[in-house]
Image (cartoon, rainbow, N blue to C red; front, side, top):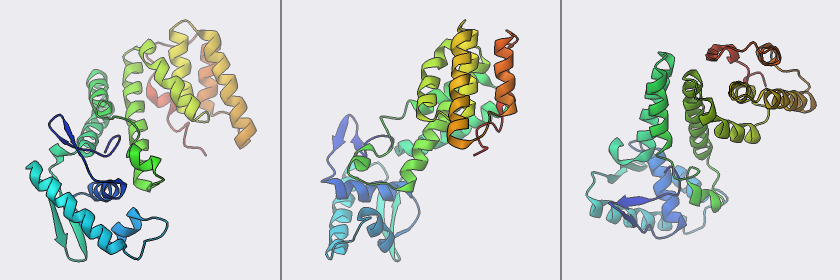
Length: 259
């Protein structure tokens, strides 16, 4: 799920039989261990318009998926349940559930100030990803809200790892990731603040101040607002060479949720 939709049998990728089969499997996996009605499943597989033969095509996909899963012997079961289907999958067999468990553990470690443990846990969670969520389906025009939510969760885990690494003083390790986040979301003040800290502590005060000016310009031009007081205080600290190495993350709390 964390990349192209795949069923793996050891080192072998099992052919699914086409994009509709992959979409059927993916939607059932997104809602694994819960009943998904046939009408809801068809609307997900054919988001624009369900064809007249859609129900039969869905039954054919279900039949093929059942054969694939039963041949794997990993404990998965695709069962009819009232008005729909339920795909029972052990959490250990689904990368999505593994990621969610690691991400939740990392959040707990972050809240407890266990920076090294949190960094390692988030790194393990991010290591499960092979590309954007449901990448092959997105390329075929599928735009499920669940896909967006998964990609947001990946970004959240990356931010958790960055926060832990900054607390550990690993500034050089986070600059590349932060530059990517700032490029993707130039109005996100938290990423800007973290990157300013990292640049400053790597001896790049001018770059940190330039980043602040760009962010301020984007906020004023696009939203008509000034940077938050926290980000302005950070700019002043950088300007005056008065930024402590272990700047606590709460300094920037709330900066990125004002709009």
